[in-house]
Structure formats: structure tokens, C-alpha cells
Figure 1 (cartoon, rainbow over the protein chains, first blue to last red):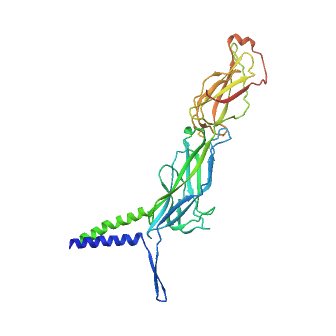
Figure 2 (figure 1 turned 30 degrees about the vertical axis):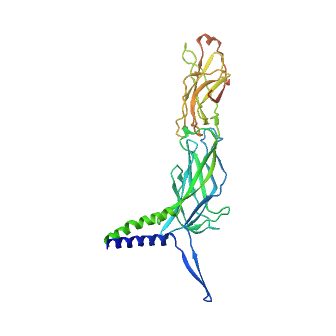
Figure 3 (figure 1 turned 90 degrees about the horizontal axis):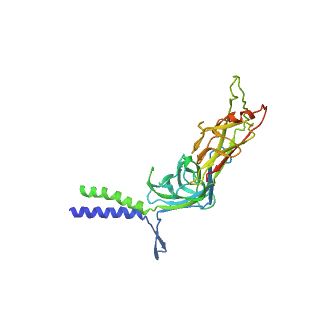
Length: 193
Length: 182
């Protein structure tokens, strides 16, 4: 009796998992009752992300004696995604982090715009309302993303607003062309997160 | 049956969690080229300073020529280097001495590493350091921002007192320079 219960339980779990992970739609095509084709349609979960690969060059300087280096901004980067959710009650998020050090004594903040809707469709999520300071930890910049695609043309996606400014001034040192990498990640989250 | 229900409740979240993992986490990246050029900018408040040497006490030497100004700088240094501000002067009347005190910025509009000031540095035609050990900093741009300089003009060596002559409206020019320390 116990074994039967456990067996039923395992079958139930496998059933649930199978149905959830792989939700095929079965259809039948009949032609004059002679031939029967079974067409299986499968939509896989998708989470793709890329940037427009913009070449961003930023310079922190001043020409006024007594003035600190002047804050610079850049909005050349666009992030594009394609998302198909595996389950209706899940959502995705876009995270951003630094992968290489910033020039010392400086701070880089990020704030995305809402995704453009010229070619963007679906549930494109909500960007953070205030800029956040980038560090080595993944931090949410867009949440509540459902199944959607942003488009791939120039001007499609989430426009990324970067602000680079002085932080601890005494730590700033002259540097020529230091390459800094920002990593954008799309991942899953529960609905409401 | 109760155990079976517990098992379902236990395994169901795990199954769903495995779906999450199967649902992929993807990353893309973008590169930024970030540059900060070395900066060494200096300005003064460019106010003419009027100094006068005299005395009203019979038997006392002439004295009392003091005045102040401010130096404002912006400095970004290369790693491992510091800067100094030097001062030199031409046009100081014969038999007199011009000295200067320098104080670090305190107005609240400044930031960074300001180095160290100096006291009673005698100025002459050869540049002498009046602030040393400057790192990356800015002093502010308002009228009282920056390093405060106090000029002290007095009679010079007692032996030279006899060379002092009356003068009106003579001009001495102090040249201030920010330089890399070697």
C-alpha cells in the first residue's frame, strides 16, 4: 500500500515536471480521412541577451583651475533581449555588474530607460527608478520581464544611461584608456520580483 | 496517503526549481574605455595686493607690509607622483624682504590630497616650494577657495637697512607654478 502511494507520487511529479517543462501542443491534420499527421509544436523557454556593442569612450577631466573633474554621461549602449517564460508565474530580470575594476576614486552609475516599443513587444518589464552604483555584484536594473522581445534594430531595447564621476578624490590617478567591462545578465525570478 | 502528500509537497518545488535552472541564465557584455588625463591647472584670485612699509615709532625699523591672496588648483597625478607649488618674485625694493605663508584650503569646496603648506618662505628670483606633496585634488573656484597665501614684507637684513629708499607704487611680481615632483 505504501509502495503504491510512493509510486503514484513519483508518477505525479514526473507528470507535472514533464508537462511544465515541455508543453507541446498536439494537433491533427486530416485530409479526407485518409492520412493522419500529428504535428508537435514545442515552445522552449528562451532567455537571450546582447548589447549593441557600442564603442564607449569616456574621459573625466576639467579645464577650470580649482574645479574637480566634471561628471560625464553616456547613453550609447542598448541592451536587447528575447524572453520566453517556462511558466506563467515566473518573470525574468536583467542584472548588471562590473567585470573589471573602475579607475580608482571614481564611481559609475547605471539607469536604463524603458524598452522601446517600435519593435519591442510583450511584457518588457520595469527599469529601476533611480540610478544604482555598479560594483562586482549582479544588481537588478530591469524587473518583471515576461515573454517578450525588444527588437534588434538600432534604437531597439533598453537604452543604458551611464554616469561616471569622481568618488574618493584623493584616490584618482591619471590613466589612459582603461578598459572596463559591464556584464548584463538575464535570469529568472518569481512573479512579483 | 499522508506521506505521499508530504512527498509531493516536498518534490514539487524541487521540480519547479529545476525548471528555473533549465530556463537559462544568459549574459552579454559591453566594454568602456575610460580615461583620466593628468591635470595641473593653477590660477590666483588675481587681486593686486597693496603693501606698505612704514613706522610711527621713532627709533623702530619700518614694518607691517602684509596682504593675502588665494591659489586655486586642479590636480590629477600619475600613480606614484606628487606635485609642488613654487613661488619666485622680481621687483622687491632693495633692502627689503618678501616672505610668504601658505595654508591648505578650508572653505569646504575642496577635495583630495592637498599636501603641506609652509611658513615664512623667503621669496627671491629662484623658485622656492611653498606647498609640497600635492596629490589629486581640487580647491574650489569661489573667491575665498584655495590655498591662502599671506605675504609678509619687511625690512631685510640689518646690514642692508641702509640701502632702503623711499618708493611709491613699485610693483613686485610673484610667479606661482605647479610642478611635478622629481
